[in-house]
Amino acid sequence: MKLSPELWGVIIGGAIGVVTTTIGLIYNWMQYRSHQRFGLRQGIYVEAAATMSRGVEYLASMGRTDLDDGQLAQMLYPATVAANKIHVVGTQATIDALTNASETLVVSALEMAKRRIVLKAVQAKLAAAEAAAGQSTAYMQQLGALIDNLPRSAPTPGVLAAIPGLVDQFTGARDRMLQAQAHIDVARSEMVALQRELFTDGVKAALDYQQELIKVNIAARRELGLALDEAKYRNDMKKSAERMIAVAERTIRELEAH
Image (cartoon, rainbow, N blue to C red; front, top):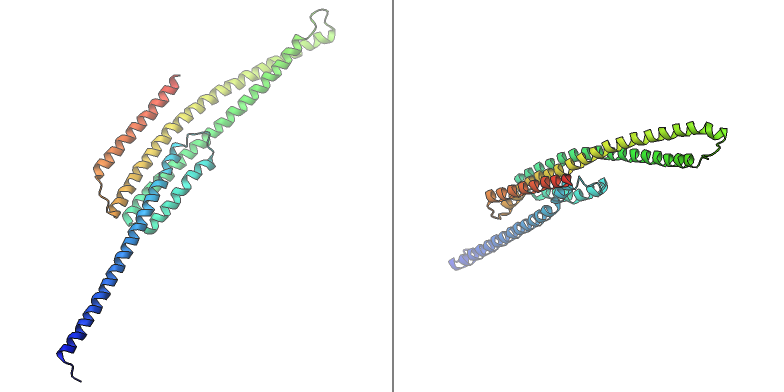
């Protein structure tokens, strides 16, 4: 059957309409998926920026002797989860920046953890020396009271015979106390020096890690299309870090002066 030109026009027009509609649906679906991906990445990056900053707090807190290792570790857990999410949705540039930041955090954390172990050993040595000094002091007090209570007039032969031994015991206890006190002085000096190093090095390590996070932030903003004056951002953050290090060092000097 031969189709009329009018019927051909209807068929062709309908086909074009179907194709146009299909292309529109595909385009809309692709746009929706693109917006979905953008929203997913944006949400993850914002979350990661907040949680990864806990690493800064972690390094800066390594010098705090009031926090145990378990409490410090809790600061890192959210950052680890956030980093894993970036590996799922991030571009290679963002992942590379994140990897460098993570390496900086791990290396610094291991170095600081080693120093905390040394500090704990010194603290244990100090506690043992203080306990020894306390025992010797208590024994000296007991011997002193015993000697003071000895009869001064008409002492018996037994009392006279006991005096030299009591004096020797008192002298030995005094020597042990003085020796323990010397160990205390050394341990306290070591502990103060280690705490000072942990404090200043922890602040520096935290700021070094923060500089790596700046690179992660820049890579993420590029990926998300969020304009930023990167040179100014880097320069401002660098100056801020220098000011904070200067404050930390000045604080140490002021504490040592008292």
